[in-house]
Amino acid sequence: MPILTMLESIRPGWVARVSQRVARGAGVRESFLEQINLLYGALTQSVETGDPAWIEHVLDNWTQSQTETDLLGDDASQTRILSEILLETQLYVSETLSQVEALELLGALLPLFAYAYEYATRRDINLRVEHVQRELETAQRQLEQLDRSKSDFISVAAHELKTPLTLIEGYTDMIREIFRGESDPTTYQATLLKGIDNGTLRLREIIDDMIDVSLLDNDLLSLNFQPVWIDRIVRNVGEELAGSIADRRQTLAIEPFPGFEEMTFGDPERLFQAFKNLVVNAVKYTPDGGVIEIGGRKLPGFLEITVSDNGIGIDPANHTLIFEKFEQLGNVSLHSSGKTKFKGGGPGLGLPITKGLIEAHGGTIWVESEGQDEETCPGSVFHVMVPLRKDPPDARSARLFQSLVDGIQSP
Ligand code: ADP
Image (cartoon, rainbow, N blue to C red; front, side, top):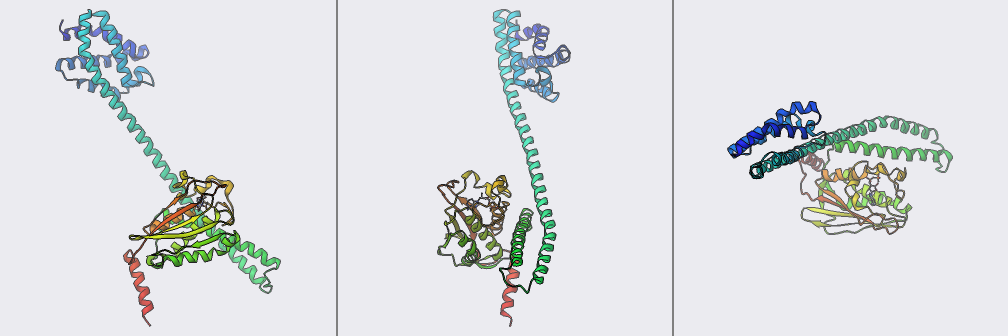
């Protein structure tokens, strides 16, 4: 019997058996007899024309009408349904046709099932990839939203905190005036005032950090480029922190290198702030008596400055994370109000700001450390690349620089 005739003869029985196997529940089976019928029609047309693409149309239809889940339940996929149909076909054909006819028919159908299987697999994978992509995009949007809310909160909180702080500073000044006669710094009042001063100073530093973070987050930081000398900036940092370094019985060694004293263009206050953050951290995360070294080298177009310490070090898993804002918040037990106390974690804004400032200068920053170990103290090395510029980098800075030069030259 020719194959098409065979196909025609087994059609009603095949449709009934296959829908019995794959369609769940009698109600569903009823409505999907038509779908199974369509598949059979597509198989027949493919045999007739030698083109298996007829099947694609039916499978596409299943996807759109969500036939799959209705057919085999929640874990259904087209590939699974096709396997079930193929198994049932083999059984049914061997029961109803002679062995030779069954073999002949299966020989014609198997390549079509293989084609359908491959098509469905490809589609399954594509659908899954699309699904994961959509999920990722949603998660990404939520993260961005969260980050924006965080950044907005920082900005609002910083400005809200500034007003009462200014009030406290004002009243402290008034109290100071009242006790002006008693200038002896050992008096009780002077000690109390010093305590308030320390507290308000630290609070102002934190608020300033919060404002800097929101400026950097919103691309609003503008640098005041002028001639700077990195060696002078680094030495100023050393002088400013000399007291804390002495308190911790540490040593700061500045090792000059070729190019260290070269002039470049940068924002001196912001570069000072960036290097100060690094040295403050080196002091904080190095035990008493430790050594902090600042050195570097000149590279084509850049100065690479290194700030090294022999402190507790940083786990390589955190080498990128520490430059993310609020990273330190994870370890609240380390929080301390003392700025240079050993391991006295702050709000975790120092390094993100430092990174933002260095990048705003066109530079980069990264850290090297074998790992964190408070016993062996492997230390950390922060590398900072600062571009060497012979001219201000933009028109605004050039104008500012020119007005500065004109001011100096005019009598
Ligand atoms: P924090 O205010 O906590 O010091 P930073 O942004 O300055 O925040 O630093 C982030 C984290 O990076 C710190 O909490 C600390 O865990 C780690 N870190 C920074 N500098 C060093 C260093 N020199 N040695 C060891 N750990 C460091």
